[in-house]
Length: 452
Ligand code: PEP
Ligand code: CO
Image (cartoon, rainbow, N blue to C red):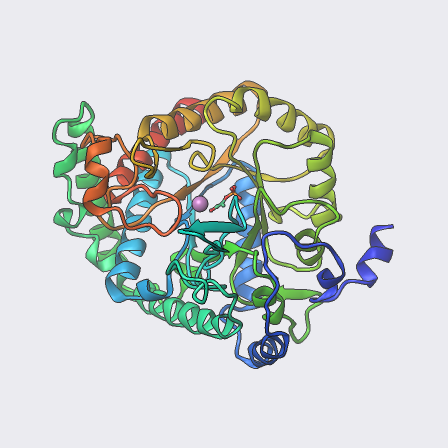
């Protein structure tokens, strides 16, 4: 049955299926033109990088290493700037060093970066005065400005997204060469925010030890890292705007199958994972590792069928199951899912997204998340996996290297009234630089308690 289905797959076979979260482009001719243009542009990543990531994920699924996936909820085209990219790479590297130092296993890093431009929304429309306009769906689809005209899906944005992703990955590749060098210096770690924290001394000693280790490594092996793959940094986004992903899905010489060459990994969102829907149809045909977001509402049997559909050969490293239940629901949701996955013998990487189930709005209608709730979901995820004898191999975070004020809590004790100081996100609230480092430190503590 699977094989027969497979024969009918092609990068645009999803067009025959019902699609959610992607509005009709009013100008179909323009859409075809942009789509065709995109199919001819050079790939952003290579098939061998994708395969390398898959083997690394296979190791995670065996409990040998850990996955750190993180970045903006939504990247914006205007934020394709040097400081944003540098800060994001810096915070991801620093977090991973903390994890490696504390856990003693390799950490693979995947950014929500260089293509994370499309967003699912809870409502198709937004009321502005007496007008009902389309919701903003990310820069890949329309503009943020709250006017009727700005919200019309514009196919030109597929090309602009490709260019912005290309500029981002080009800079990341260059930074992978030099990026580690900066981290030799403890002052690059901006430790002061932890001063009042009970873990400060421990944290300071750890940073000292990491910077020494980096210096030592460089002195015995002064060779450059020179590639994203060697730096163990990969790109990912939600495969939501299927025109963007399909146009970059291609066969490559001497390999079987199709690769989405716009990112190393893509994921399917919690709102678009219906078995009979367009997104699953598209995803079942590509060779890339695939993330599956699972939160309420969900059904265990259907999730198992989804995993089987996306990975019928049970290839290891292919599926990252990213649970995002929220701190209340995780106790009910996660155990039966772990048991069913084990019963069916499905190889998956288990990852915890403690962000999307823990969002709330303040009295002034700012969307936020509480650091303590995020940590609570992570702690529960570790505890449940440990109790089930299963391995929690990764985390999936919305975070930034910048000093934004979008999530409350953390060592600095940001409260709701402080949120407006530097609230930048176009979509969901992100952990800032300090909150991200602190969380990495606390995740490592949890991991050690569970698996040491
Ligand atoms: C996201 O990762 O930004 C997202 C929308 O997640 P989910 O599909 O889990 O709600
Ligand atoms: Co989000």
